[in-house]
Image (tube, rainbow, N blue to C red; front, side):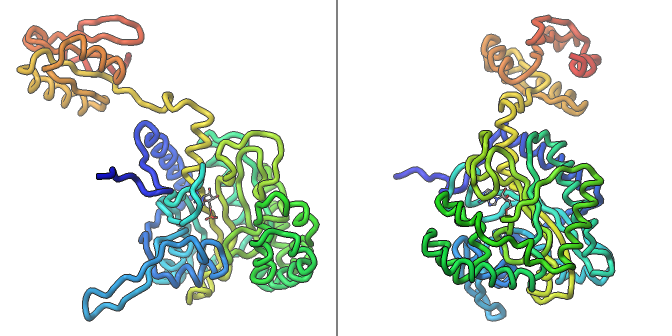
Length: 442
Ligand code: AMP
């Protein structure tokens, strides 16, 4: 019988790497709390219409990457539904905002999430079919200030803080404005006209996009197309005064906070709901479109650590009230890859404070009681087994723990235990009552 393996594009995360995942998530939660965000958890699958309407039929995500199935009715009271594993979380958050009438509070909603997303993409380094995103959204009625460019600047400043606190060095913030839907429609036509002549010389995808959704041509990563794309008109020239003022106010606030960024005219993002501000944080030597510059990207060609932007019309697109918002999604898998390139995996592995080695199986119960005592006092304890020879216990303990503690008949009776520290090689006799205190110190 053939052995079963994790499905292509999915993978198991094992210790010690999971310790790094936990550290990243703990840091993100701590930073989000300081910016006064609360956590939201939405279901992993949703009605397919949420994504086709919210994310957009023409996007790569909806047109070819979603895991969608017919969910058959199981009772008379149920209807057969078309469901989809969420490919992103913003649409789900906005659906929840509408469903729970969060807008009626009149307050700005500041929500973050951490969880798996699913896209049937071609797997490669940094790109998986199940991956995890850490994201946040600021959404609310306009009266709550949800459209203010200060919100945009604050989100970007928070992201810079988070990446810095995670210890990610050398990130670049790419910033752009895609304007209002009217600006985008205008720019789409400008592009469409420009592409009539140029598209026949471009890749098949671009030839298709030139007709269906010219804006997406800017996302093209085919090297031969890059010089052509550079000559295309810029969206900045199609923005109305309102979008320009909004962008200028956001960048002025960002300048005041000292967070560095570069304007990237090609950053239009792969999701249809974006309006005005769009951004990406990248890491490594590639720009978001893949044009190379010096420096080695550690996350393969997938150098975007995170992306986001404003989505002032998304709520209405899925049947809700007016609720402008801005948010982002960080690729957690890529954060892990970036951090692993900066530090040894071995440095992440945490050793136990002590390995308790009973001598003889009859000492096993007493060893469990001792381990319980030490664990209750907050120590990380590995429990050996009395059937092991002492030499074997030492070998295992050396790999797994900072100290070894021998528990034989004599030690049990006298209450004086022998502790050996592996890094110094010193052996000490410690009274049971002082053990936890001693181990905490060494
Ligand atoms: P998006 O939702 O497409 O704006 O993506 C936001 C971030 O999620 C990207 O910058 C990546 O870091 C991450 N991401 C998107 N797709 C994948 C994937 N298939 N595998 C791993 N990370 C991904």
